[in-house]
Length: 393
Image (cartoon, rainbow, N blue to C red; front, side):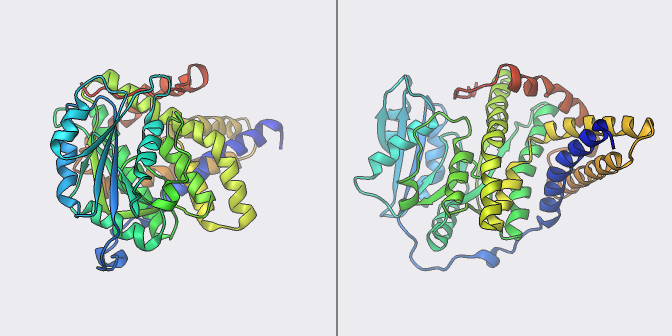
């Protein structure tokens, strides 16, 4: 084998592994009966629902109304009005929440707001803390499921977190909604069936007080949730996926705001792969810990559109290798990766996506992928490194 063959074969393996991970997760992601992981009906632990909010006056009332009926007499609902220049604090207080204000323009970001809220709760700590974003709706029963599952497992617990497009949304936004379902519902469910942990998703997260009170939160990491989940897993507390608990939000109306949001998420994810995958994978091997290995492999799956771009590029290289009379192995590996990923996406669409995307709309997916290439190129040239709030209007 010459260098070109070896390089192409190595690249084929690089795309084959995440494709195989997604395929395995999707094929295992059948609905788990509710009774299978039902927590006991013993009195549940006390909870504090913590909501970091930066200029969320327009939508926070709906969020609070979805949470308040689920709280018990010993529970708390705390809103951190973080560097707000609108009426967020007053609206949240009028709705029945406890409110604290934080003003520190030099240190902006959700992580700082969470740290401020945790330090406020420390004066009278709850048994559990549940973190919810200020633009999310919390489905009935979610607080109870999160609290009981977290209390009994003594692990961080992640709810299903979905993003919805408006009824009048473009086809691009509907494809994004389906991709979100695949990433935040189907794949974690498949991992759960294997007894493996999931990534934390930023909202709908429950933590035992002793874990969250010691966590390092005060930073401006773009995907602070993913970082926290990895840190806790390495400390021996891998996050647990709870299918029965659900929170949801919607994509921004404006195209520019939606693009900013996607850039923050995906640049943050790619940065996390580069920084944390070697450490997570190395510790999984050193400890022979299958839970860490499962989390590492899940982390290594790049955003779906980028994975498709990588796969098509490698497939083209492998075809060149084969065409000039060299090894057929890279082509075999690249075709296998393409087949696994295509099968996974079609299966996920059949099970969870038909109500979001009509079959004919799947033909537009290649154009959606092509449109995202400039965003991935910016990761190398103008990477987003600072937290920026997503504008809803």
